[in-house]
Length: 560
Image 1 (cartoon, rainbow, N blue to C red):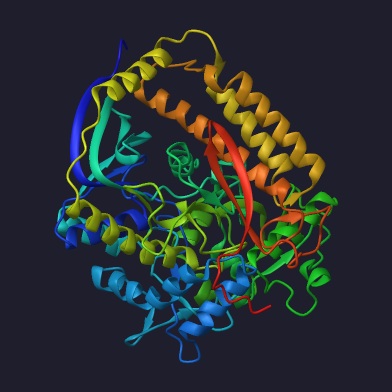
Image 2 (cartoon, helix red, strand yellow; image 1 turned 45 degrees about the vertical axis):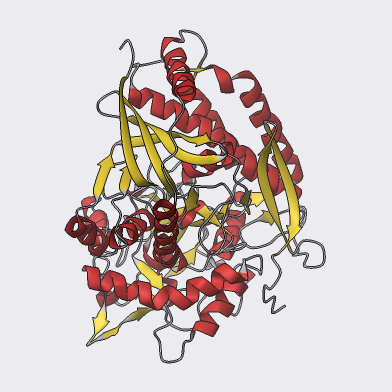
């Protein structure tokens, strides 16, 4: 291929990502009178927490629940590093957004006209509004229907490689169409990032392959701040049967309905760490205790632990039809056969800093969903991720529309277009360098070994030194060892993004000398509320990554 074809597109609001947050943002933009353009790196419908998640969002519908209780438990679950103003928005709008999806056509589990609420760990009352057909996209079906009904334009198999700034504001993006070797210059009055997290920094993850931290890197490069990147939530992630590797067992092993965990010695090990609660703890605690069992040699044949669903009522287990069908394909019956699991990367609590309008501080750039930070604090309550996509997806759509209605279009300078075009040409012509696939493997190996569930200073320093060396020696010399195409360019760009995000996570983890939420330091095993009730902020300054610890935003309700 000599070079990519080139096209210029215009839209009022560009939405990057077609998961739950992206679709909800697009619906809001359309309902407010503008025509959004949604681009998705994968095939539509896509997304991580929405397309393949269990399909339950938290909302305070239970007679013993309240907005206040949901608020308090979200802060407690986040070890009080949350931005309480954002949490307040989350819990106050949760019920309305659940009703929106119901109205759009998602089928929820109900008893009569009332939602049948699922009991998640971390919530003191049943709060999970559960979609039918969980783990097979049941949650997003209403959103997909509404996007289709409104005629919203979706371009899938398109990866945004970089954002474009003019006069200190984001005015569009450059993107690669993976199937046609086309380079798009997309002009927009506002851009919403709804790109999800970065689970594929790790070798074991519940995330689909394309979740590589693109949004974090895109925002970082144009000057946005990020925070809380050290907090990576692990969760039960199947490693056997082999064909289900990466699959999260329903409801964290359905521990609230009778699911149990055993180590390789057939000991119900969670009782050693939490005699009163046993398995009924947060995901962070599940992951930490399980990793200790594995590292101390009490593992199952495939280097994990056992999950036992035999104690779950069969009628409850059969509700998870997608999971049961996948098990049947593997000739595996979870009603009596244990599966094996280990902690896998699941969700990033940290992300791009936003205010109550989903603004980033960079004019023209908005964020929604897992790509944003500040809401979850140090650990996320199970079920709050889908709530986040709907509440802040709607807010981002509204805010971006307001901007697009009040400003005129800013053109992208021909000089900048030439620079972008030349950059891609140079990579395509590059015949020497480092195979991006090998570098990707190096990154995931380093992160899994040193920056996983259990961390310490020695390992984190080794990780930082190795990542710095990779960036210095290989970062600007990645090459296409195979086919020279837009897909190859996109894969190479993913590795560049992963390298930046890996450095963020590792550097922040070293700076925080305590154990809090999903961040466990073996050398600092206690929480330190005196000195470290702080968020770590990250930004690019003169081409260097700068980190700064700041007190939790004023007004947060500590309840310590």
